[in-house]
Length: 490
Ligand SMILES: *[C@@H]1O[C@H](CO)[C@@H](O)[C@H](O)[C@H]1NC(C)=O
Ligand SMILES: *[C@@H]1O[C@H](CO)[C@@H](O)[C@H](O)[C@H]1NC(C)=O
Ligand SMILES: [Zn+2]
Image 1 (cartoon, rainbow, N blue to C red):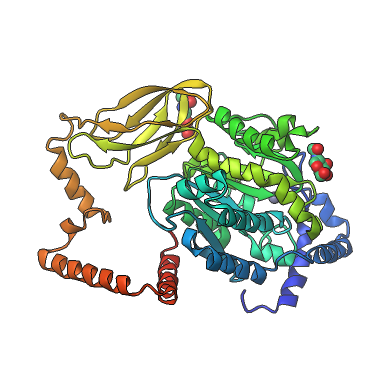
Image 2 (cartoon, helix red, strand yellow):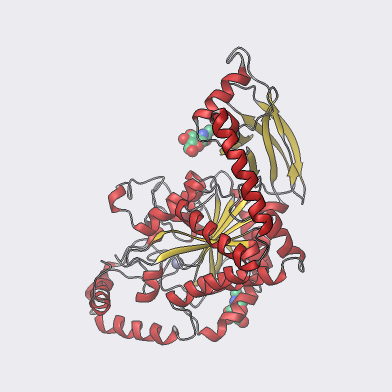
């Protein structure tokens, strides 16, 4: 595919456009949820071509894919102290899917929540990719100056994928280069529609791999064509168009309202009450990214429609950024400022336990992180909750909390269930060294190797001490980010 002549590709894709009616925001046909085939028969070739030319004109002032890559690298060059960049894979046409991570400890595994923004899921909805670069630069410029910027950089690992669909962007169309709508390409909870791994698009696979590596607490994908904050479920079990609440309906409404209420005028919508909507009530979709995040990745994702006009003239981008800025910042900050957070340890050896955290009467669980055992559970404020920590081999513990406007910190110390597993401490450390944990490196290395490593650490430390000059440090940073790029994430 990568060797195809671009104009041939363009010709092919314009023809393929016949098959799909692709002008709506989040979904296919807004009313039925299905592709309207009648459009295909009505001689749309010319109108598609002029549609393409129209978008091509509108693209003036937007970053091309290579401009975007340069902007991402320039951002990292300017703000390397609080960022790193890495790629999670490549598009069909081989464009790297760059992510920039913003944090005061980028790339380090810490007991902090992670948030992700994904822009340009649909190729012809390019506002998000521009806004995400504006957001990144704003955070860099305001770190240590603005309290919200500082809170985010210091307490969140914010990962930003400005474009998930660079090919669709350059082809000025919704789907990727294979003409697949990426927001229909994820496994679905109700219908076995995308279960063939070989059929799944590289962009989708990259996202799915990414979510296995990084444990995100919440996220948002940015779309255009409407002005509304959309929350799960996106689909219904019977394909009906009706409100379909997920177990965390209250929390999602809270998050969606936080976004719309902080926006310039999203909450004043005449179409959507308070500027928010349940996805299935608006129009059901299947194979969407949002529901998949919640079901399979412990991640609370919103789908944000941030401008009525999918492809507004570039001179409106600054205004749209201003309209969304507070919302974006508040949404990211909400994973620190609300919900219940803590770590889970065993009472005998004090080691972190990747336990399961549940809330009574909410049929949903999240897992504490594998190595540090921190958990971050978003919850709507104004209620009492019973928080339950469960781990095989330990006694379950339950604590009641009152969730007001602030976040609650709650650590758990779990006692071994002695009937279940005697001699907990030693058997635990053995199973640890079998896993890839590098926490107790001394247990993994024979003594002589350990001494060699220690010497190496001392020598390296001394070298670092000597190499104070910026150029050398930059060189090392570059090498470090290249190494990290290969493994893709923490
Ligand atoms: C929000 O403001 C924009 C820009 O002024 C306008 O185009 C849009 O119609 C407004 N939307 C609502 C829901 O008020
Ligand atoms: C909880 O959710 C699962 C699916 O995640 C479902 O199979 C189960 O029936 C639900 N349980 C209750 C009590 O609703
Ligand atoms: Zn969209």
